[in-house]
Length: 319
Image 1 (cartoon, one colour):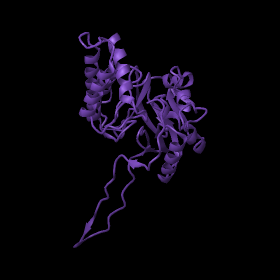
Image 2 (spheres, one colour):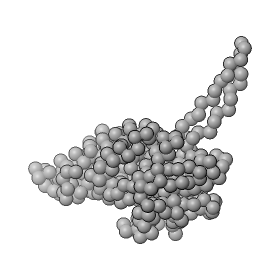
Image 3 (cartoon, one colour):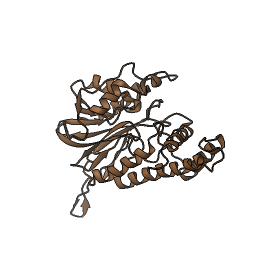
Image 4 (spheres, rainbow, N blue to C red):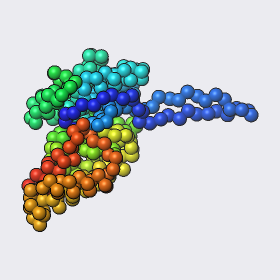
């Protein structure tokens, strides 16, 4: 999601390793120390919580995305240093400010760690056609870097990449949650890193007006990585891949259906969404999805989503 600030909280681990207990004779031997969690996670505070993930590879840690602000990145860095091995590579899922803002902090801490992005994401970051980065810097109290740190290793969309001694499969998706986004899959562990293509129990950002493309991307994702078991989303807790994809699809379809009522020819003001219709859609979403924190600190995110999807549906009523 573009823009917005959030405060740091301590890391939570995506999976918890269980220590084995060995029985000997009549008593139990002391429990063996728990092995490290396979994936670490730093989540900034709500509203606008965003994840930084890392996992162990033969040559060190692989970092997935870098957080929104300099403060968040420094807090995540402190947690990552506790994990032991140094960061050996950084991979970026997409160009939105909340996923790339902290790259400079990690690059300074680990200057030998290459930063990877697809050519499409790298171009999006360097050109910033929607002006997301100046907007983020202009927010009151902004802690966004004055200059982005760009990828120094780019790859063609849908190409596998070798990072830190592990091969990751990739898939590129366009015109969905973001204009371009890369999903990373680790076939050795079944872990999927989709960026914002899926969230978990969060209110997504539909501001780019590509809800139809997002639904199509989710359908493609289901077939692209059938062996994916656990998904580590850009926002929200990790979860079962099939369940998170299904829930994300359900949310988007429900939202589209509610907005479609407001822009139907038979609605009170036709294609124009009235304030009352916006309140009706917002109430329906809140009732269906209570307690879903926003991926942005924008207090009117749902209302802005209504505007964006309404404009999309007027141009293209169905997928």
